Image 1 (tube, helix red, strand yellow):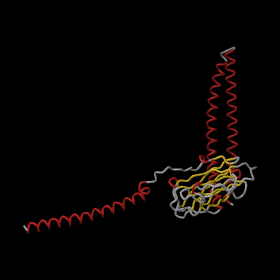
Image 2 (cartoon, rainbow, N blue to C red):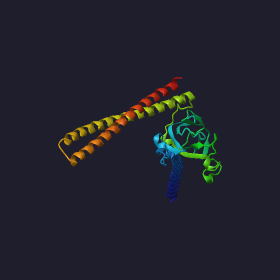
Image 3 (cartoon, helix red, strand yellow):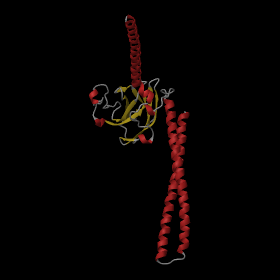
Length: 300
């Protein structure tokens, strides 16, 4: 009897040890699982990618907005996340008589809801660069508010970090003083450039010249394409006119009058196309002269 009790006690002790051992393993597994789970949720966007909505305005013609009596276009942008530097280049097309308006811009970290140190540099009468400094290396969304003001320093309607309930917007001046637009940059649409840094004024002039020459060459290509199409159309009109002239010799009365009207209409079309060709040739000549002038700016 005592042997049986000893054996039963040994078995119970053995089972208890087994349970305690595996309970410890279970709890350690839960701890590891919890830590891994928290890490996954913390870094899930890095692992799976950011699936939030992309808000990005892009560059080029699609960014052209009406401001004042003209337009403003974002022609270039760049970010160096490592150094915290970014820049945006603007093309400002305003009437020459609009001398009282000045271009200015501010940069805002949307996630942090605060303005970032930034300064506008005028490159030419039409080109400006916004230099942005102290950008957070982990930035996600930038907003650039730009426009024309009636004084050198704008009283913008953005005062970030003052009142969270107003989403950072407050009035520092009357809206009539600022004709303003917004431009968005999403980190998923701009690849960080480790070589990007603020350049000299001369280098920015060279960049502006490069952009203007590229745009002018596109304009010349368009003129040449239109001229080719106009000459082809003239050839088709002349063939049709020749055919009508032969028909005119074989008809009389009302039919002859109808053919004559058709020939007159063709002659008007040919004259219009010839004017288009002539104007295009002059425009191409002017554009080539402009390219020469632009190149001379970088030679000085």
